[in-house]
Length: 452
Image 1: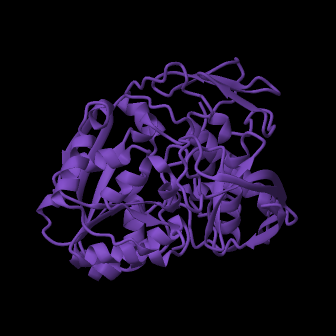
Image 2: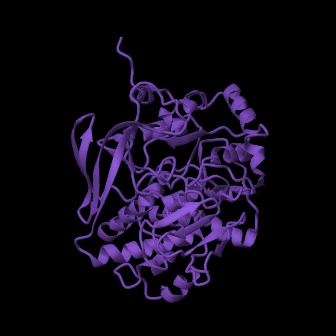
Image 3: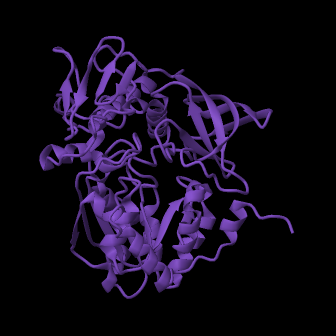
């Protein structure tokens, strides 16, 4: 008998509500001192999902790779099926846990009938499904708008929807540097939509409400919360994967970040960062954003203007390519894919274009901003990913900061040419002077807020 691929196994797997024994074992693991409790989570239960006797959804603002622990502990003893990114099922360290906990696979940012069918089956069984409508954990400290169509999806099932709100989880564990930085996390849970709410609201109204309650900037929050995180003088480590442009001299890919310092190698502009994630300028005349998330916001504004002013805009990136394993999960915890090729990706006004080789043969593809509105950053910020013909691929650039720029270029090309995945209304100032600007965007005032 021919051996089944990992993809075949996931398609054919029967997903059910976890048994009491399986859930008790999962709960035990989540509450061990070196798992959930070590993160100092302060829980507030406003509406308890355990009181919901029928099917329901739990959604949350996905800040970190540890969120499943916080969710598990705050809703205990309620059982649920977690939704996880499809590529994570190809990692050996998750294979046993995902199968025993009946974790549901979902391909991020693309149409995925297999994932939707798995979710539907659990709801039909009277179960609870937990997922993040953003489609990915936070990349740079604040929430991205939710995936288009989330409201219509929830309205179709018309079951209660609970919301877990997290504060501090990104500052504890994020995609820029995988090192845990323990401080404090606040987690609260409440009922966001009743079945009657979903019946009486339009899909757009549902989306708007989710975006409103989801929005959170961990860096901005800690300016008031003043929680100290154990960064071990490593707070700036690898920030140059996302931060690539100097606000003082304008140079790109000149940013270097090591330990607790980030600076421009061209002009010396930069700062150090303490355990509260506060920046302190390194030079007297520094032009320094108030936080990494503010720095990314400023970079986004530069990209918005750059692509609109240049009808011939083209950004080319040389990359190595990785693919998911076909039969055996990857045992190396530091990688999520296996090398399979190389080439060049071009991002221009017509779409995303790749020319290169895969397994020694010529490989080309074109992707449309009509379908792709952002990139997937699955594990760390030195790799970006796309699904091509339903298959997952990692693209690993040579130059630091490339992923940071690719993220913004793809998102803002989509908003220029399609705009199904809109930016938050309160970020309308970013589009000052463009077709997406609002009359009262307070551009000058909002720009000042981005800098120390």
